[in-house]
Amino acid sequence: MINNTQFKISGTGCALIDYLYNPVNFNDADFKRYLSKNPGDGGWSPGKLVFKEEFEKFSGEAYMQVREKITKGKQPVALNIGGPSIVSLIHAAQMLHEQNAEVNFYGCKGYDNGGAFIENRLALTPLKIGSYKTGKQYTPFTDVLSDPDFDCGNGERVFINNIGAAWDFVPSDLNDSFFESDIVVFGGTALVPHIHSSLGELLKKAKEYKAITVVNTVYDFLNEKQDPSKPWPLGNSVESYKYIDLLVTDMEESLRLSGTNSVDAAVNFFKSTGVGAVIITHGSNLLHFFADNPLFGKISHTVLPVLEKVMLEIRQNPEKTGDTTGCGDNFAGGVIASIAKQRIKNSENQVSLINAVAFGVASGGFSCFYNGGTFYEDFSGQKAQQIEQYYREYLIQIGR
Image (cartoon, rainbow, N blue to C red):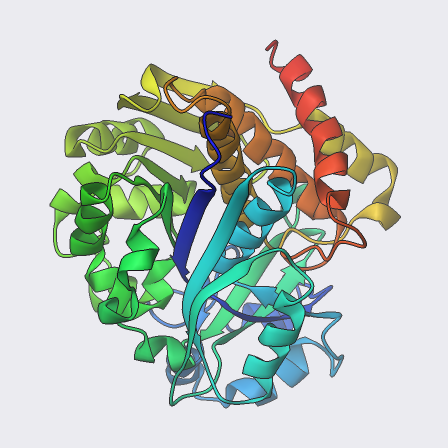
């Protein structure tokens, strides 16, 4: 480590309660009745998010009654902290347990049982709270309908979201302490509308404070609904991208952000924006990344597989499988943790993006072994110990 100054990560974005229903049969006739027919129409589609209000307009039915029918009246198998921001930050904090580092979250919850639940569960994690505002509305929540047999056994989810108190979180709620960080992370801000629309200005401010900036995305249903023919915006304009050191997105989101219909075209679009680096995940399929900035150096468009060890264990031990909820969020958290570890070790050297991707792959793969996105440890370092094994296996798999 270069000095005794504590390495600081601050993040904001989507944080909510996940109610996980598993299993739900996506091939059931009752489920298929509510499938989307056109982009942004309010119907549900595997892997995507829809807002409760929009679903009710689409279906003409009360969502809670539909949920009762689709889940066959079963209770959720897990109630967990969810959301691309807070889940990735919890994971990063768990991975940095032996480092001189702290990870902080800034967000908004409701003054209700949901807010109390999040507070209680966060106390079981090493994540610190920079500021957790209490809004006027209910705590945001998402119902996660999970079919582990979908996509030839790879599994997939449908998300029904309620923004709630996230409407009350605004840029002025992010104080100077948020920006005075080594890494500033914006996660799933499409579900925190006022932060999302101001991303350009917020990213620029973070760069003025010399922070590394990371953005990990979520399906942007608000902009999809507004105009499904246009690319999704990040902030007010494409200028936002040049203030991003690393963008982590999935395949569907990358195509909609770029307004293209292929990964190669999406990569070319992102390169044209001046973004520092991009990682594009694709579930159990190949992932893509490139870089061109001082932090990571210049890396051409590279493709890597998922972790074979995880896929093998799932096939051999179906009872060990949890669900795929939070795989992408834990992937992002693993990448963030790896960047932090490398900078703590030597703040002058470039960061190995390939090693960061590898740690992300191990982190995302491991999350398939438990329900929900957040893993609650029995002791500090428990999760890091287990993921380290998968990380080493993956480095061998890709010849590193």
